[in-house]
Every structure is written in C-alpha cells, then in structure tokens.
Length: 161
Image (cartoon, rainbow, N blue to C red; front, side, top):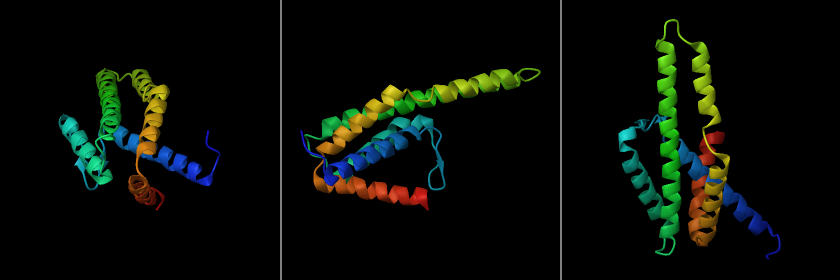
C-alpha cells in the first residue's frame, strides 16, 4: 500500500473532479440549451454522444489498451443520460395531463415534479460511474492526465467567473 503523499492526493482530487465533469456533461445532455449550441435534439442523441466520445478519445490520444475501458465508461454515461431524459419526458407528460384537467390538478403537478426530483439519479449508480471514471483516469499517462486537468481548469473558470 502506498503511503500518503501530496501527489496521490492531487491525483485523487483531479480524478474525482474529472469524474464529476464527465458525469455532469453526460447528465446535462438532456434538453441542454447553451448560447453556442441551441436546443439539443433528442433524435440526434446517439450521434452527439458518439461525436463527443470520439473527440475526447482523440484529445487524450488513447492507447488501444485504454480504449475498451473508455468505451465501456462512455456507454454507462450514455445509458444513464438516456434514462434521465426519458424520465424527464414522462414527468413532462404527467404535468401536461394534470394541467389540462379542468380545473388543473395542482397536487398532481406537485407529485410529478417531486417524483422527478427524487428519482433523478440513483446514488449507487453515480458512485459506480465516479469510481469507474477515477479508475480510468488512473490508467492514463501523465500527459493524458494533464490534458484532463487543463480541461477541468478551463471548465471551472467558466463556472467560477
């Protein structure tokens, strides 16, 4: 077992941040609006995810040994994002039906929204994705890890400014 060192702590922190950034990116694909993207088209979801996966793989210059683990991780993110989008769609249907009643059923709207919020993400599944991302991050070469770190620093600047 390795002794605690600042380098191990930094690696764990950047790995966890990387996991959160990847997870956040995957989870916000549903209905995301950005000034540079416009409205996300659910019909193009798989194409968008494949483009994003290819872009990340190219930026990291993944080795043939790293590619299968990366592909498996991206499949998990894609599946989770699809499920989340489908749940949100069902919530929208439930809310619309409640509002279309005469008089509108405010209690049904509240219940549908509570259900959506409470069922957003399974914590055990998120933990598994974060652990998998950290495990993948730890397989990267130092220059690949630096690419991830620089990306996270750019993303954090946008959030913190």
